[in-house]
Image 1 (cartoon, rainbow, N blue to C red):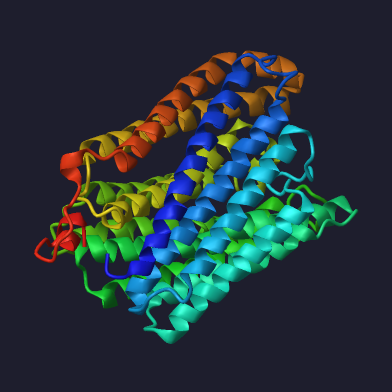
Image 2 (image 1 turned 90 degrees about the vertical axis):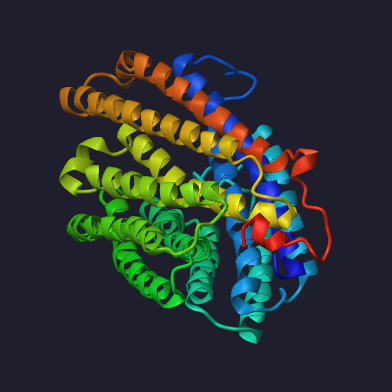
Length: 452
């Protein structure tokens, strides 16, 4: 670790991992309710559990992004963060808002729009936190060195913060409501978040492989161009059946097909950088997570997204378990695994230790990735059967759900593997044995041992 202000990233990462644990445990609980539908139905209804599961996911991923920015921007800009106090204030606002939102959900107070259920004043708190963040990192970058990584990262973070404004727009017309809703949800996860992913992945591969910066930057700009080109008009694949003009069926289908390209480029980029790399980096676990993130993202967001993005297919498959299969694998690969990669790389340096117990960390990767892959296959089969029985034959919804019970049981087993892997990851990263701590002293090359 080169700059003292990078320490603020540790607080973000720890808060993110706490919410990560809550998110996966909530998901496991929701998965059991699919197996036993009346479980906790009076005490904690399924819609509230699902709300907690999805909201915790979004918040901890954002905390990971913010922490990653506070970690990498000082190194890229070659200067300290503009204001560490503002960074901690931003974290406090986000965590207080999260706790209050959770409390409101538990007593039945929420906005009712999926992913955007937060009470209005919590939404304003998130906006204030985003503005503090943008001011803080922008002032840091403007006063320091500019690189392609910081340019792309700031573009992604500025755009995702500005798009949050659409969370406040809730028109009475249902078609308009869903259109603005997708401006947040789709343009976050399939456009602006991809820029953040590309920037963080580029930083990790630059540090882990030792490839020339010029090579990394060329790849980065190509990935960004394809992500924005395909992602913006690719929003149309959500406009098929919500009352918008029929031309969106063709616009959405065509540009959604191109959305596979940036994820394929990111996967190719990661493996080419490792192939060309000159550095034998000690943090093998961080490299595994980086390669795993780009690979699983290609299959989850790219391949599984393409499976049901064409309007002729989507007419039958939308809203089925095929959507759930795509959603789980794409979020895990593109954003969960990426955040866990930057945590794995940065935390040893932030905590002044060697790259900890990497065997446990890598075991957690295979447990989570294997569990998520099995869950995806199970849900894909379940969704295919559901599509045929419900949308083609016309069987009743609940009769179809009863027929899928074996798949839901297998999905629960896969979810249990993911939860075990997640808890193992947190244990491997945060629990330190005494002999692993790097003793302070000018003669000890802590940065080399810890992963720099």
